[in-house]
Length: 448
Image 1: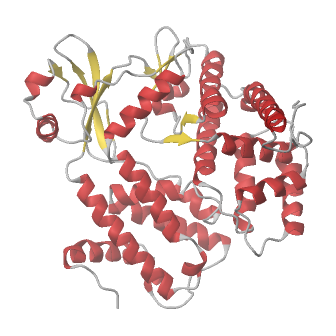
Image 2 (image 1 turned 30 degrees about the horizontal axis):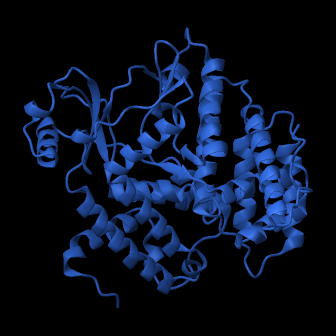
Image 3 (image 1 turned 120 degrees about the vertical axis):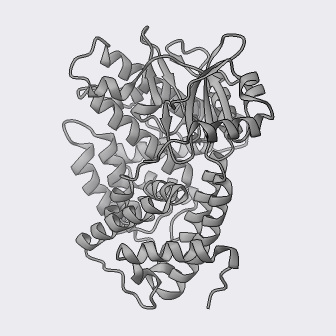
């Protein structure tokens, strides 16, 4: 019998009742009762999505993060969890005032000359208001929902209890790395709950994008920012989703698509530090056509070695160089003991025939297809790669809605070539220094 802390009784049984009401009670019943047919997995995904949406911010975030782990979770469930959205009622102005004054230790009137009471947007973690500082600067103020840290802490502890129960009661519970996913979720949401992290992310991205005059990243006002409050420069512009939804627009959509994709590829391949959630609501287009990026709660980090691994995998997939794909995965140390090379290579051949040789290359479908293969062969991809895949999937979806004829892969090629030559020269340098044997045979120098 699991020991449930008294302080968790109420929330624990509330969660259990929601799962039972949505037809998921068998998760906590001894025996291997999880249906395995594809159509049943879809039904499970729908029920799980509805249950998580009902249970609040921590569960919604957990589902959204789980939806990026196609290497760990069956695709029918992943596809349903990807539909989870933050649908919350905005905080009242009285609550916003209490959070601001409590965090900044001053009266609202002494902090801001004006604060618009109606939020620009509201989500499960917080909401954003327009404001004006006493020096006349126009700012956007992000305010965290009160008591959210305590709620999330409780729910994370309960997640662990539920995982223990699922592992004890089901065979499939032992098959999936739920504890690893819980740690990823806990680390991610705790970073997001400290708005100062988001401010530091914005500031670093602004420095890295300094030479890109087509991209605007808001300045952070640190004197008016705390873990629960973030005050940043207000960027005027129309959200990209409004341009996408508009039947007629005066904007040059091809130029917007080109500028946005180039900005992201520069962040990924050249800097290894990138905006990981470029959906249309996080992109603003100014009257002058500049691109404003907002919401830096989710940021991707790629070390140089990780970027080299990505390029090797892309090279191997495109050039049908299965030994290179296998070698790269082995170097990363993520192949399971039971790895079946023959069937893995057969699956890669099917992937190439279906996606890579199509008349119009679809990056999103190719990434998803590769994730399907990874899942089937029990390979656990590093979380940095998952975040990159999510970012590229989101970007491609955004750009296809904006300009259906836009080719994301064509925009990526110059950055890939530049990165490949970077590997070549680093290997050559290390050879002369005697620190590494140079292997340039597998490098995709001639990317067409």
